Amino acid sequence: MDFQLVYSQIFIQLLLGLVSVIFAELVRDVYHLAGHYWKPLQSYHTLHHKAYRRDLSMTSLEMYKKAQWYNDVPEALVMVGSTALVAGLAQNYGMWLGCLYSLMFLIPAIARSQGLLLQTDLTHKPGDLVEIPSRWTVNRTYHWRHHFDQGNAYFCGYFTVVDKVLGTSLSLKGKVVAITGASGTLGQALMEELSLQGAKIVALTTSKDAQFKPGIEVLQWQLGAEADLMTRLKSVDILIVNHGVNVYGDRSPEAIQKSYEINTFSALKLAELFLSTVTESDHKAIKELWINTSEAEVNPALSPLYELSKRTLGDLITLRRLDAPCIIRKLILGPFKSQLNPYGVMSARWVSWAIVALAKRDFRNIIVTINPISYIAFPIKEFFQSLYFRLFTSAHTQVK
Ligand SMILES: [Zn+2]
Ligand SMILES: [Zn+2]
Image (cartoon, rainbow, N blue to C red; front, side, top):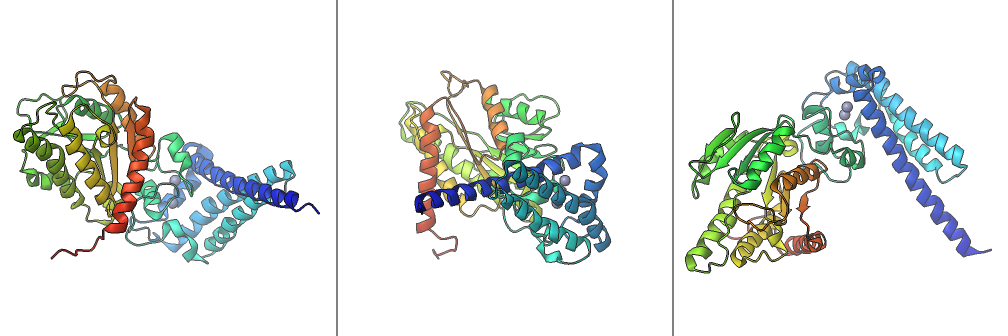
């Protein structure tokens, strides 16, 4: 008996089994999308949305049972049918795994429609949200957003791939987005792009005579008086910390002071202020902090003090991310044309478009640059630094 052949056969069948499970989940997501966009299914899927209150408790057992019978049972039936069809056509026994997997959803759904096995509905477990939205698989907080943030986004049921492809991993519609450095080139372009996505913009600026388009809420703030923004930040959904200064070749003590004060500590103070506003269960799902740390985190910017101060900010954000109460995204941007950098090659408009497109696909590290090294160097740096920080620090206070 050729053992090698037997082993490779088992391996191939297992692999095909895994593919069929992923296929089953894709069918689930497509069925869900149809529930939102295809008329014949809409009224049945609406029952699912009507079955839950904001804390994911049932509106009534009757409604819940009805939703299971008219939405979850047919959804699982379609999964069972599609996977069986594919396995049958392929005449491959490994692929029946997907069908078996789908049956594991059909049986509990039927039971729940009869008022049994209610504890098995994991993504709809009632109670406060305790985690931030997960990245690759769907947790309660991720799915909560589909019910109570934006019904036409966050469609995925288990793997988050379909949302990433469709750009529905983050909905900006109706979100209140505050941005610092609003009068700068990138600030202006980002505000434009975010407005196109349906966001309500709050422009935070230190410049007295900056001009903004009508309809944009403008708030003046001052370096060192970040705390004055606290009241407004409470009702902001997404804060983008984007302000910065570039002293170029100046290496005077004043230039050092200024670079760190603006690029590092003022940014950090605002970030902490915003994170302290994440107080309610819903905030974990909706609030986000975006920090423009720039490509200087891993590459020279031909301006040492800009690099040093931005790198410190980036490192501290990596540290803070370990205990993030909400999603924190880093913007790792290459040189774009602006007042700070007249030699930039990318346009701020294009960079903004890319930032938003990647955020909508749930990139937590948004890298937009023409320098290929950053796409490799940054993730490696972030991974190992984060690991190092995790190993040698603790969230509990030790310093008294
Ligand atoms: Zn649901
Ligand atoms: Zn839905």
